[in-house]
Length: 142
Image 1 (tube, helix red, strand yellow):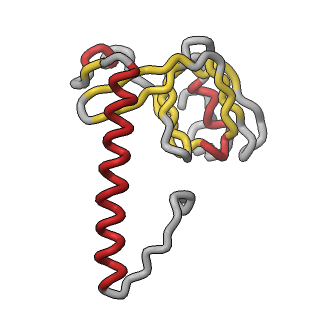
Image 2 (image 1 turned 45 degrees about the vertical axis):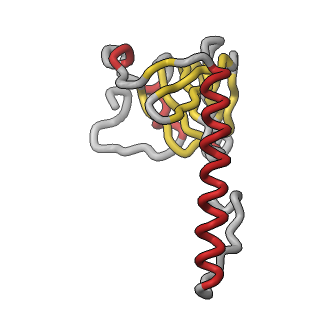
């Protein structure tokens, strides 16, 4: 954090100053992962907006593969950000993952979600039969 007073740690939107014009990975509350260059942000803590330039992509991971969906300019409310991390441009090209066409990734993701739902349904039934409460909703993440 070169742009700050020595010994000071900022936990507000001021901590984003050093991230401007850098390529970042942002994980949102709904689980989406966005990759792009941070161009600006505002001063309101919970309403901080991260504005990415035209090359923003939503990356979807399935197993050891990934696919990118171009999203263009993306504005994000700060309260929806779970994780924000800088991407090391030197290591970006040596990922241990394979890039696949987005239709294949979406089909694989759909299958993975259906399998997970079947497993969860079976697990919840087993837990319910043993007296445990299983009435959690998908929105009960954070």
